[in-house]
Image (cartoon, rainbow, N blue to C red; front, side, top):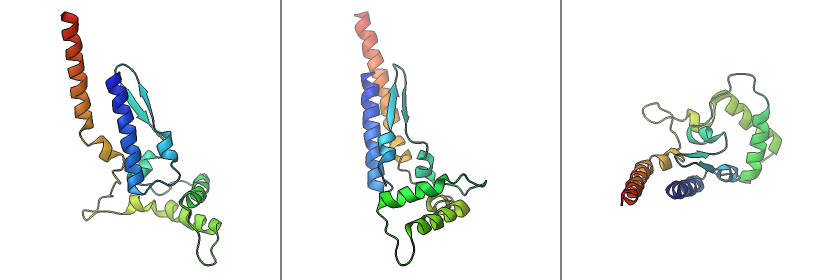
Length: 153
């Protein structure tokens, strides 16, 4: 489990670094939500439920919505230190942003590449897919082989 603990700690640090480097971090709440649950055979890293929206954006609202997005946008405006310009209030700005997201989704969701595909941020996937899983598997296999050899001798 030392290998798994080390892996989880490094992984969480790297996701946090990736988030910070990307500029998508507003309050740091997502980074603080990252946790690892480690058993002798598994590592499960969890974080805030909106990880998918960070990675792929948020789809347009398909139902009436529950009103929660507007309060989240108000908090986001505060977290980012956004100051509305002209005669617009913070509440009006939050309303406009919320309406746009409900209609089209977030910019990350509806922005496409030259093939027409949405562009994931890869803030999380880029860390997962950097070869670390293969390295972990090799480290665990080597550790098991070492333990078996020690037990035989």
